[in-house]
Length: 130
Image 1 (cartoon, rainbow, N blue to C red):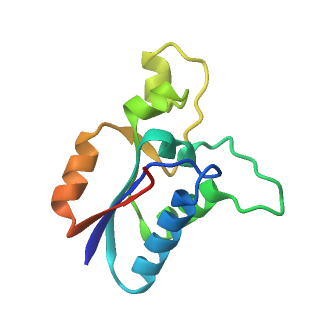
Image 2: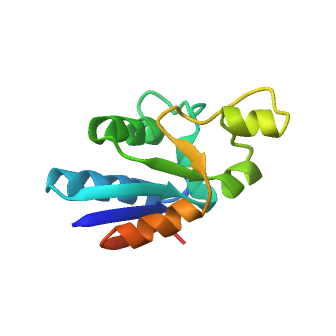
């Protein structure tokens, strides 16, 4: 089965980010395909390269990045939600006159069209969070 995953909650405020990660990992281990993971609303915070949790805590951003690296996952961050939360990649920083970036390199910023395409291409869209 081909899944698209939508993550609507941040990495440390809600269980949804962990649940989405473990769902994706389990689906891949069972031989399913993940067409795209789309981070929306506060879920965009799963993509910041500046997250530095304590050593004895899980690093949700690195978990996603490693899973993406291992399985060549398309990890998309909603541009509007990211901008509202002060998250930018190189292109958005340049367009908006910002002097720094904070998106992890395994993620990319794009629009809601990527979510629509994922929902069309996948057999199931699974949404985590409100």
